[in-house]
Image 1 (tube, helix red, strand yellow):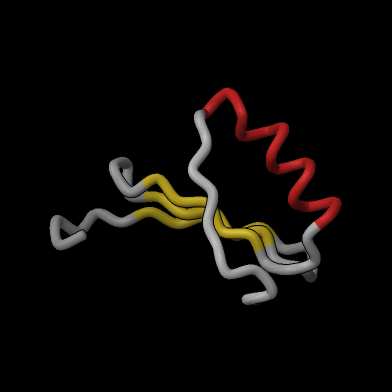
Image 2 (cartoon, one colour):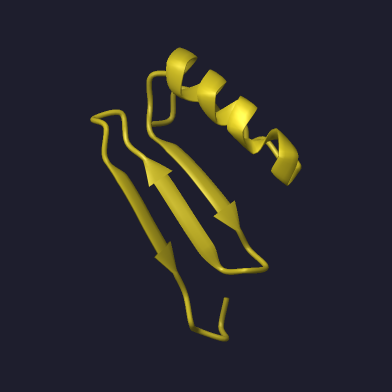
Length: 59
């Protein structure tokens, strides 16, 4: 984690192209969020994929 100090905002149609580039070229965990829909996906550098969503109104 934290080898990069920036985030990227992309359009849905750009997601798969960016995902392929990031996984193949940036050796760290990758986090993808949709704050409006309240979900998160993490693809770890160890190869795990986790998904979660919130049902809380506090977010």
